Each structure stands twice: as structure tokens, then as C-alpha cells.
Length: 202
Image (tube, rainbow, N blue to C red; front, side, top):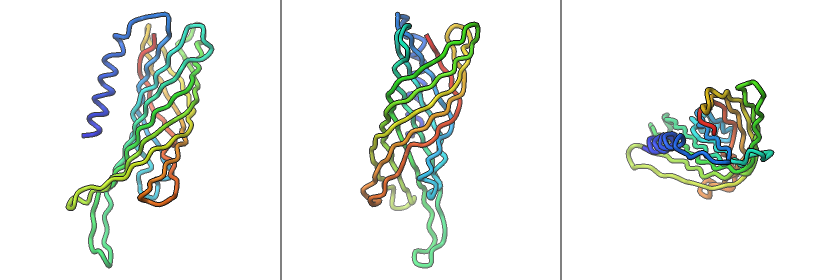
């Protein structure tokens, strides 16, 4: 259900973007779909996550860089089962969900006579992450935590027609969180994102 709500929100934004009025400000809305790698969750088999998001850029035509506001979400689930000498057979679902909000600046290079647009960006990042376990019998329990850090990334896209963008993106964030219920160890819920971009630029 949570995945459906996220997908619906992204679809709603996608439908609203073409209706944004033109002005003397440059605007870019690029939607992202790909994979996120969180190395600190490798022991739980939750390190490879589906990643969805949107990269938004705003700025004047004569600005050297544009303001960047990005929202990235990722999710993964894993079924854990086995047979323990003391506890017997066990089978439960484990799920990880992270919402990351990034602020910063982004520079896009426009090459004369070419539709190619390479870009780079960096800034600060904040994230809220949740781990949930469901044994299918007693119900589910979850723990959550918040953290702050940094991000950087870039990519390349092609301008198709007057406003449509299609390209590739790679980005990395470092955001340490601490789950009180799991002890004092910090977990980096940032990581590497890689995937496809599509959107609009005005």
C-alpha cells in the first residue's frame, strides 16, 4: 500500500509539471527510477533497493548554477526463514523503507548545436528510514530513525523536442542514522543510486 501511495504521488507530480506556467526562471523536473545500494544493510539482504524519485532544479537564465531540490525514496523486502534448535521453524518478512530529501546546487552544461546536457550537483541531505518485521502471526513491529548528511551526483540527458528530457543518473549520499532499539551503532542509509531519468525542462 505504501508503494502505491508513493507511485500515485509521483504520477500526480508528473501530470502537474506540464501545466507549470512559463516565466523568466529556468525549471527542470526529472523523474528517476533505478536501484539504490545500501552497503550497511547487506547482512539483512536489504542492500539492493528499488529507488524512485524526482530531481527539481530552479534558477535564473543568467545564474551560474541552479538550486536543486530532490526527493528520493527506496524500498526493499526480504523473506527470512529457517529452523532453529531452540525456537523451531521461523518465517518472517523484513522490509526497509527510506525517504531522502536533498537540497543543494546543480550545474547543467548546454552544448551549442547539441541535444546533450551533462550535469553535476551536490548539497546537504536528510533522511527518514524505517525497518519493519512481520512474522505473519503476531503482527508487525517497526523501528525508525532520522539523519542528516551530504549528497553529490550527476548524469547526462538528451533534450528531445522543446522540453522533454531522457537520460541517465548516478548519485551518492552519506546519511548516518542510529536506531535506539538496535544499539548505538550508526547505519549509513545513503548509498549509490543509478538509473533512468525522464522529465521536462522549461
